[in-house]
Amino acid sequence: MEIAIIAHDGKKAEMVQFLNQNREILEHKNITLISTGTTGEKVSKAGLEVNALLSGPLGGDAQIAARVAEGHCHMVLFFRDPLDRHPHEPDILMLMRLCDVHNVPLATNPATAELLIKGL
Image 1 (cartoon, helix red, strand yellow):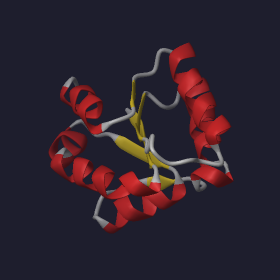
Image 2: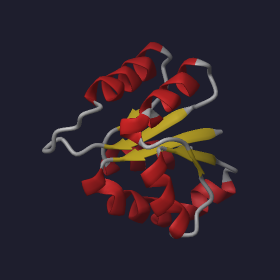
Image 3: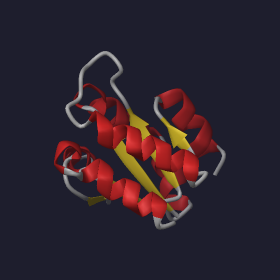
Image 4: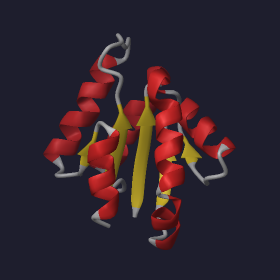
């Protein structure tokens, strides 16, 4: 199963903490993680294996959206910072729309992500 992880700058530490807390589930279920570039760097430094794509503003959100549309990505964990502006907002909205179109579970905060991960 492929899970995409994305976190805005103010949420990256929270994503790393979340993944560390759920490391056993991710490893036991043989999950493949993909991510946007900078999130992937942070997660990799924490000792988790992740395939990092481009940074979000450089097209990483769009790359993940394409994987959702192609049926390769089965879940998206996107820790968004709703209090900050993001120049790549159209790509973010496209990703969220494609998750809805293709019926792919999408968590935009740690509480929802926890429910999805525990549901595995």
